[in-house]
Length: 222
Image (cartoon, rainbow, N blue to C red; front, side, top):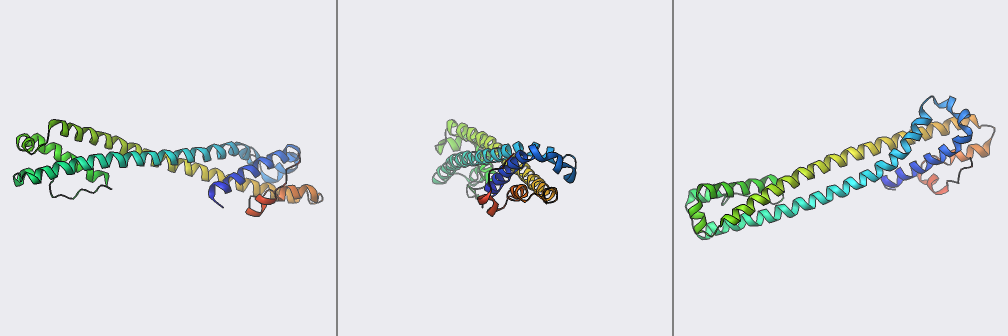
């Protein structure tokens, strides 16, 4: 069973426990301590919302990663084209070095692509005439600078998406653990509170969030 399925089961069982407690709270609460039932009530919507938020965050992360990849590819291709033009025209060694010709540029590493783009832009500033003769136009450099700025922005967004995803996943997991613990405590209290009422006790026992319980759980009777 996936984590999301387990979490959904816990939420559903928790809601059914709360439904049972509409009639049984005075019998159960003294056995579980002040605040546990209210905490469960507060956590259930948080658990549902955290699950939705975690999913949204993962989608945002994927979108940011895709945008980063697209921007990196465009910039990488343009810089490599500029390097090729420089090599074909056999420019001076210093110009080649300043433009990054022969220097490894890894498409999968954002910093590597950004550094390669920066070298090309700086080389054009220092050696505009030979690079112009090699076929590089000011418009090419402007495009490199624009793509570099775009990739930098996308990279920041992608890192932010990673952080948001982690935060929402952590909140979801913490709420999940609290809900499961609260249900277990309440069912444990029901064992004592309804020791002479097996039919009522059975309703609580069925609400422990396990795989088998998920398949068997009856509708609670308030």
